Length: 392
Length: 66
Image (tube, rainbow over all chains, first blue to last red):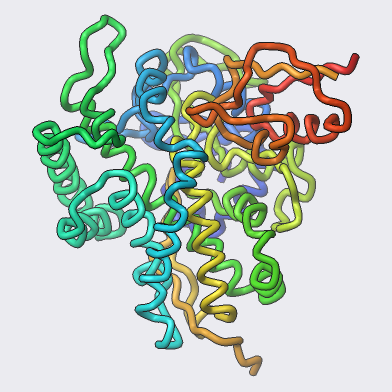
């Protein structure tokens, strides 16, 4: 598998954790012949080196190892410094821990609004009833100030663009793109609100001193939406999936919510939504023992790095008592996930509220979480029944 | 004990000031504040400073024992 690796291989989706553990423990580099071919880098040492060296390992040709024609560009993710850093400098203040802390009460309200709809039913599909909605509601309400009446249509587009039939995804992706572009344009005609939309519309200068073009501003918002929503959906779903199957951990977190923040670190460490974004090699170089040439493609396997035995003791074990464990769930280097602090807060509040309202739940009999995996991982369905499972 | 935070490496993960708020603090962007200057760790906060430094995925924090 590691000499002819393919992110799209169904086996990778089905045996995700086992494959990652094997990669982290035994396979510093996996080789792929898919498309123009690529190497998957699996160790902390090498991934850290590449992720921090953006001059040699560029993001500007996209996060996919074999980019399909016509994929819309997302920024700042698919760009390099200095242009990348200019955008990040403008955006970072809206996503800092201090800034997102202001949203905590609103996130709690949203979580409870969603739980209210199924708390008395005895069961839910955690994805379609909760986790597919919360990140989007938080983002559009708290950060973007999109009119509430536009949300249903927007969510349908994001939902079908992310989880719908694969052949239909691009058209919904474009619908979301068009909506966001129209919203940005509408906001240029309104009084400034001092929010992130104003900052995107104000733009930054490119290297040559000319202002960022309109399409780049749309690409920024598109990145915030498609980079931030489904990833958070997956992280919270994977955490709840684990808790549904581990009564002892669930009870401990319910009885002691102070443990939730460090549990969140463990959940994102082991259940990575962003598996392995690509980098394009700009000049002949070596990475560990690997010889690379200009024009080669690599993927930085952040999901495997979080399980690197050099980095974490007993890496495959989920232990909510770990403190200060280093992991790469949010990436390494200048492209570190912009939304990491908001994601952590959403995960914390979700686990606190879900456990408070529904202390006991388990997988609905005969079902299991449905996942899709490539360079990203998503969960599309998680059926829960409330109460403790009857041991038959 | 002194610590130095390398601004070329700090990417705003925020692990240091989450784990050791007595030693590290965030700036407006969520990066560690007071970068690129060697500063003295106050007595009694050495273990905390080390924990914060070890939690950085970038290895951006250097600790030097006097």
